[in-house]
Image 1 (cartoon, rainbow, N blue to C red):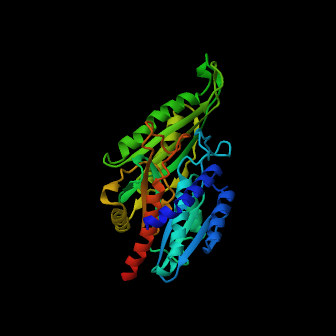
Image 2: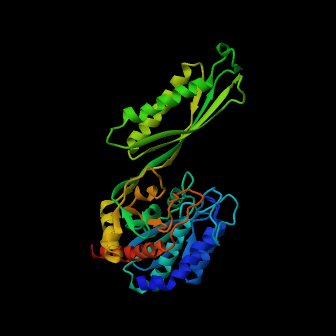
Image 3: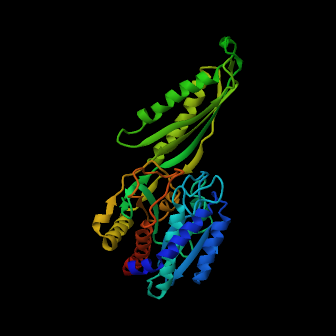
Length: 390
């Protein structure tokens, strides 16, 4: 398998660099999707579009089915790398590795197609749009029937990991990424001269007190052994030193592994926001935008993927992943069928500085794509054999 990947590796690099040079934002990945479809057509791989920019391919025959998924969208970031294949689209960059995810899945798809007659079932290949933007392309693909006809017994996905050594696999069962909700507040008071604050109702003062209180929702309502994050990341209000403004707007993010606590806390945030602002004569509207649920790795499929990784890469190259408060819309799949999402180390060993995800200088080691492609191929093949024996 590794030998065949080495033979087509230049093609995988070409896929990655072409996609990297032409990044597109969430749900606008028309050129990227056209490119993916052109590769599938070239290798005579059956496929169809089920959303505007979401593609599903199918390889093999039989009742059993396993799914592999990659995301195809980029971020609104201006690239700062000096590379031949730098982004050609101003203000847009593949700063999260989705170009690599897609290239590895294309490479795996080509190899699986070559082995089609040997497969013990069908492999459903999912090229998914909009991972970076709520409501998430995963949800839209599911609503469009991506997990039906045939229904996969399990789904697998992967993500680059800049903190990890290049090519090593980082994997863990249970919760590995958090839910992520966007938080928006609008505080409306009564404007006044800053030298006569008693004639107004100060939304900035109300906002300051609200922000301080919000931190207690995490520190005093969640089990200390559990994880939760509430961060207010933006505050806008006022235009001069001598004017108390009429309005202040806040934005933030809320993350958790506990879905029940998450929903209760959103209710508490709303109640606290209205109550605290009322103390200052200020009206407050709280408008959360529900995002992705927590990402849960099924124990059985994760152990299976881990064992497969150890068999093809060696146990020294398979590490335990430390859960993050990041979010991923792969979580929508994990709520419906057994799912496993692993991470591939992408650190450039020659660099002193590690640029993380969503950084304009992110430049992962392309060699990681050999191991990522191999793990996708072998996991699909081996899992079909496994469920065929059950």
